[in-house]
Image (cartoon, rainbow, N blue to C red; front, side, top):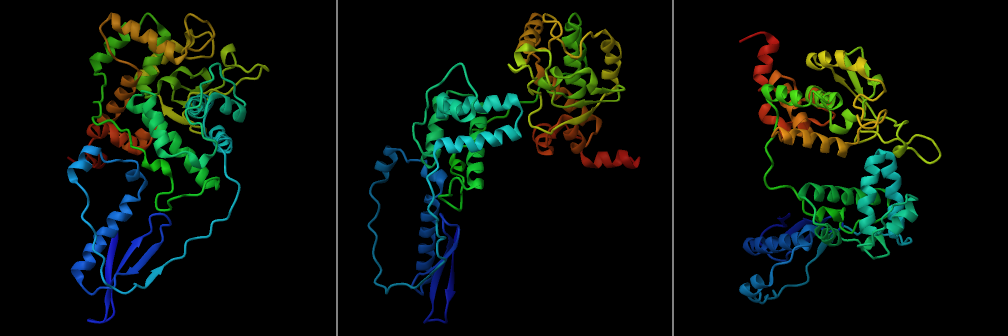
Length: 423
C-alpha cells in the first residue's frame, strides 16, 4: 500500500508519497515535487504497483507470452521537467558478514527441531520428504538415519540461500501428489525456513515477507468433500459386520464412541483405562514388537500421537462402557486391539485398514476410520457439546471443529436455553 500527503502551504507546498519498503519493511517517504493532486495520485498508484510486483508470490508468476503479445509494448514514459526531489528514507540495517550456510547446516538445524517436536513416525515421514529433495546420502550423513532406498537429490545446490520457492514448487509438481499431500510438503518447507530464519542461519531477503516459502500456493482443494458419518442404523449394521472379529469391532467402537484416530485406537493398552470412566490417550512404547525395537534391545518410542506432549483424557460414554465391560476380560495381552494373526502384537495401521476394507466391501459398505471419527463428532454436536469440550476430547483445535462440523453444531441460543431451563 502507498499513500500521499501534502506538505507546506499552497502554492509553495508539494505532495509526498509514503510506502513500506518491500525488502526492509521500513516506512519510506519521497517528495513528488508537484502540487498537482491528480498527478500525485497517478504516481502513488504507480508506486503501489511497483511495490506489489516485488512481492515474492507475484515474482513466481509469469504472464503467458500470448497475453504479452496481445497487450503490445508499454507506452513510453514522459520525464517531468522537475528539480531533483528531496527524500526521507530510513537507512537500511547493516548486515554483518558471516559464513554462508550450506544445505547440510540447514538440515542439521531442522533435524534437531524435528526430534524435539515430533514422534518417531512423523520424524520418518518428514525425513522421507527431505531425502527426495536434498538426496538420501546427504540426509543420512547429517541425521545418521539410514534408509534402504537412497533417492538422488532433486536440489543439487550447495548453499541454503540458493533454495527458492520456485525450486520447491517445481519439486512438488514433479512428485505427482494429491492436494492434501502437497499441503504437507508446503508446510514442511515453510516450517524449515521459519526455523532457519528464527535461528539466524538465513537472513531474510524481503523483510515485509521474510519466509520465501510464503510465495508457494496453498494447494487447497477447490471443493471440500462432504462429511460422511454413520447414522444409528448404520452403526448397528457396521458393528454386526465386525462381530466375528472382536479386535476390529473394538477399534470401531473406540473410534465411533470415543472419537479416536485410527493410530490412537491401535496403540491403546489396558493401563489407559481408568475404572471405565475415562481413558488416557498418550504416546506408547512398543516393547513386544521386534519390528519396532532398536538393535540394542531398548524400546523405541513410536507412539500414535501427532506431537509430543499431547496426552489427553477421553470420556468413556455409556455405549462404549457397555462394550468394554464384556470385551476387556477376554484380552490375553496388553494391547486393546491385538493382531489376531500375530498373538501379542499390535495391529499395524495399513494392515488394519486393508482388513476393514475387505470385510466392508463384502457387505457393500464403504465406511472407513475417518468416517467413524466424523460420526463421533457429529453425534456430539447434535447432543449440544460446545466446541471447546469437543476439541479437547478429539485432540484437535477449536478452529478445526468449526471448519469441519460447523453445520452440525447446535446454535448458541439453544444451548443457553437448555442450560437455563427455559423454552
